[in-house]
Length: 309
Length: 309
Image (cartoon, rainbow over all chains, first blue to last red; front, top):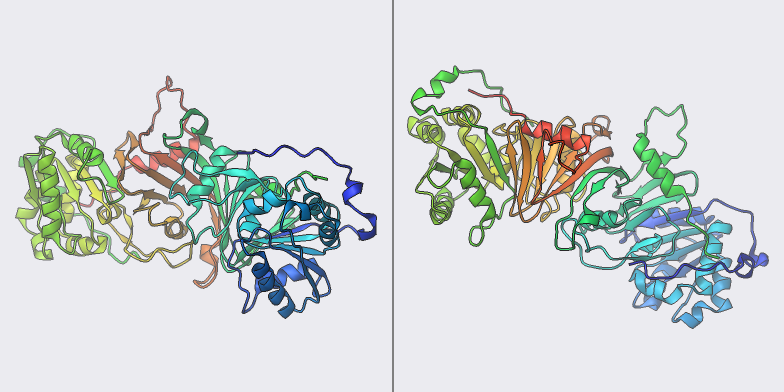
């Protein structure tokens, strides 16, 4: 249920301290399906660092989704150090009071990259919803073009309509996918993670039945969907990203009760494997055709959500 | 691989003994995803018996796909007896010699219903391919309108392009789905079973990439797809039937090697839950719209394959 109130606009200038201003960049999202390689090639985390601006960039790690934030921070501190990042700091948010502190918002607003660890997406949202930290995250992504990466729960939380932790369902059911409000950087899609590995198509389709105007995006483990705002998307890592598009779907969702069985007709499905890039405006010279249905879906993915400032 | 040679036509009259002739009926298939209820309501097996003509009909059980055909026969003998069927007999095919015998073809050609048990679909095909029993099965279904039911391997074998036993793959891959020729009663679709329970979407999409002109049909456990030739389809039991339709799909299957990753764009997906019926020619009075894409798919499903006589 979307049980959080809409944020009333707080003048952005309050959250967006001019001293941190930088030339505007394209906001990028690195949406990781969990279990990304941290030991070997580290393709995804390397790319995240590159998209932040390289090893000289300021990377901040938000591990508040984890039940053990210190340990999650230590893991990424070590990985980013091994990748050569000199300036990597934790954004510690043990409670909502911290989420209102200028220490936290300063860390967020100075970041070139923010990495959100796994855990429980709801734990993170409960800590930051409607706080200064939340507004600072929006200012950082939307105005400063900070690169935001998230893995597992940290990927799910990037959606506006956020899937919460819960049991997988083997097939679509009416009330099985619980949705809440997430950070909202992906406004037009519901992101699920550990997708193929945990057989989550049923759950994603269940969510789609509730929000047929959205896309469902399932990201496999050790795989990331990179979204470049206004430009295109790319899949990197080892697996695939599955997009289910229910915008032309016929569903009985609104006419059945929760014990009745869900019917979903004419869903579109795309399997985008790692190594492929899809531009919103493909060059005429490209020999590769992208179906109109996928181009539309990409358009939805690269559109930024509203700023909550 | 489709490694079996096309059958040359043997005059049907040889296989189709007039003494067994009956008024022509609509051939029906009851394609069960395995693990159908045999103890409680037995919705699916009850329906199978009804479609054969009721408890007075002659039901024959083909259990040669099983590694223990006698035990499989005993199971269904007992269930069909409990359901009130008086004339239920096994079609014992221990070897290919038996599959050429008139004892076996007589049993097949006199049947009102033939039930094919689980096991290994390839074991069954190895025993009957190009035999008199195979031709008799075609004559029974296509000419006599015998109802044919199959569960698990017995469902997979109903396809012309038959998925063989094999490991599930969590996501679509180029060479992961092994196909062989099956009985061919479902000519336009590849049938998979235990579908949602074993997370077989990846495998079915892999098969679809090899045969993009086919539909992929995934049947859940304790669920059956009933196909009425030329008329329509119905889903019964507890779960759902998932149809993936790749006929408008763009895929890189033919341009990659087997280590490269499969891309599948613009696949259509339908989730048809138990309790729903879909007619090829929906009545104008029905308030329920069936999308054109699904109607086309139903058209493919209800079209009979070629007779191998």
